[in-house]
Length: 429
Image (cartoon, rainbow, N blue to C red; front, side):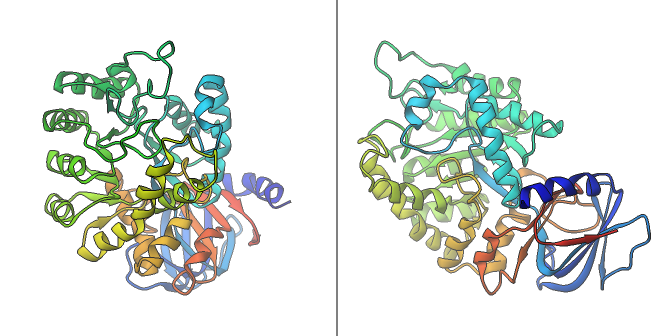
């Protein structure tokens, strides 16, 4: 019934040029304090005014009543994989699903993500279907968040994200730059240029082994300094920022020194790595949700292949303690969940884990608004409810300063001025 109501409301607000949002509590993303009793004026997909009090509308203005809610900028998740989701059958699906199957299933993941309040995501690696999903959403053919995608991640031979891993010799193949696998600086340049040709917005590398790859090593470095420097240089040539999957500390340090934009996971980060991140201005995307998920599922017999279980139990469990140390040290934190490992739509659980580790609620929210927008180079468009910014707006019941868990209960979602979800709120014309 709620979904039906939301769908029926879509035409009403999609075609209203001006909408007033009456906000009981308002987190703008820039103000230090939460504002009360304000009106957001949305015109043609952007924030036109932020006014104290509840403005009275004219006949041509639609009003959405969010006086019982906390209203905040549309949320940004910097680490998702929109094409898939962990399950005991995930490893066999690469042999049984066609790209069309992947794409159609992913549309459901995209809708769940948007309805959870995440109006923008950064997809950090898939088959290339993620590029088509981005374009379909931008054209209005599919409902979902705004996607910035890395297309395929870049790995080294046998490394995490080498698509030929885990196959028998008959099915294995020698993957190269087209498949996102490189050996040496020249191939690094070609792989980045291929990602650009294929429509990527950013570059993702796997600087160390990974937990969920079908390989024993989950933490060793997998790129040389020269390869990393070539990847970062090539990405800069094409105006793309870079993200490095990294669990082990040596691969992490190499990536930071090379100029990587974000470190993903950072499970075994040490004091030296933290100091390097502060020195180089590197952002840390902790993905606590994924660490919790894999550590829990590794205890279920048969959920993961046997080679993965010890990695999931050790590395996954280390994330929250590492995150707390990095936060206390002053490393820049940006929000990311690794949804696709953890379930799509549960993204807001990351806020809960951050607050459990000692981050004040408003700071945790800021990692998914202002800071995440900075990483994407979209700080003039996203992450704030300020005049001129895109009207990406979400609302939750209650006050997240008192109970961060309400971030899991998003009741209202607007993306570029169009209402995508409007559950128990009232509206009037």
